[in-house]
View 1 (tube, rainbow, N blue to C red):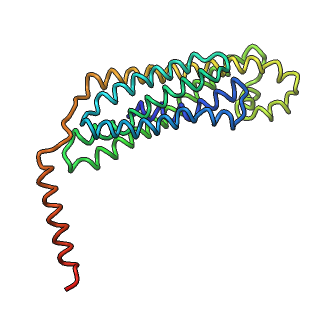
View 2: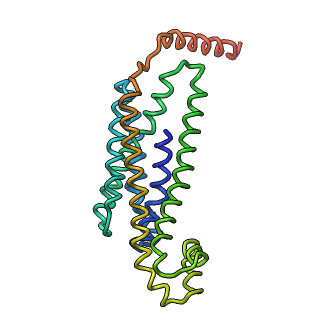
View 3: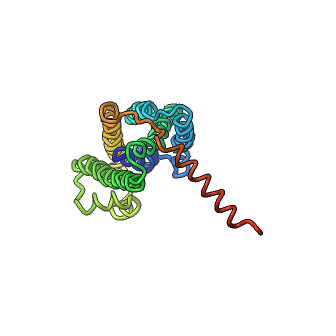
Length: 249
């Protein structure tokens, strides 16, 4: 779930940024290209939950999800030209993989403990996922900024100028002039592409490691419990008693 949170937030935040900074897409177009990921994620999150409900098995959903998600992010890291077909296709793979790791993971962690511990493991799962997302965004941002910094060294920019360029390209253009800005523009696109490529490759590797960990460390636990029938009967009796006490005389 740490890896899940890492790659979930990284791809939602940095894929549109990648399209804007490398390909020059507008914010609207970049955001629209997230739809293949988000819609597919929602669809397969629902479908995987139904599969677990029908079959009682969650392990296969998780393994398939991690494998396809790793492939999707790996393919996104290979984007070197603005091909709409590839952007949509790779996004569909990433969304399909992500969707298959959401609901089944919750079922898996709850199935592995007694009922009295379900609330604790659920909250721990969510905490670890959020922690992974927070660290993923911070580390990915550092990787991209370092790649850009190193590419700008040959252009004789001072540290304050590089920082200004990273924080606000428009203010940088106004302070150093349009001509000097044009000189570094091509280098910037290449540097951002290299930084984003590293981020997506790291995400693909993490997903592959999550697949290996799930394969060896996550058993298939029977979802039905011995006391299910008894608890259902007790619930029915309490419901009938409650209705009997509240019905008019």
